[in-house]
Length: 298
Image (tube, rainbow, N blue to C red):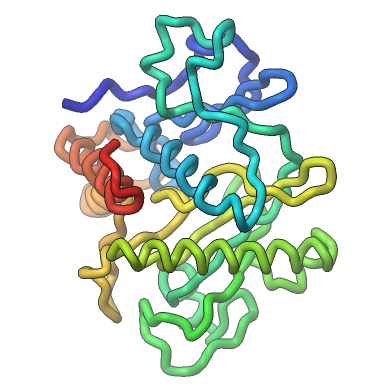
């Protein structure tokens, strides 16, 4: 039986809340940040009800797993993920509820670029390719089909917007925003990280189609921040489901998107609560990708 969903950690944390995103909450510990990953779920720019039990644990523990696995490639912001070390900040009565869903991190200056790497022509990249034969200004071979594997992964950044959608930009524009040297660092590290994770995923029967990565600076040094190779920040396909010219069922909140797309929701007003079966199937999906990626049960 699933544990109760956590929609917010407000009232459980004895530290100031700095930011409340669609899923994550950021608290100020002074020298460090405390990130709490809730079970909230969003789709089509709406936070939905109810929350999905254990989703936050999957996201947090997967990020912790990948941060550790990739630490030889680039340093990251993780200090620890042990709620029992937060005595005086998290009261004892709330620690079990928050176990597995917290991360204490270094304070980094966020670089306002979403570093997207694509190994396959799908999603928004496929739409760009259909219109222009390019993705973010990168000319691609003619005749590619939806979900085609690219000969080499490509780096397709987006400028982050705190309000509205991020903006796809060519690399030259990114270099103007960040400076040429940092832009080149970001591209190189992003492609290295994607290639490493894609190989690891292939060993587990999973296709890593694309991913988005975030970086920050600590004392002028580039480090990896936020989340990494989770279902919310990557497009995973089960190898057995891979095919060209179709919409491949991704290993994430696809049950929610499918349900909403097939409902009479107008996508303008807040949607009705998700049916229990959709919530249960979404929890199952998140736990399954965790098991397949790490080899461990949640």
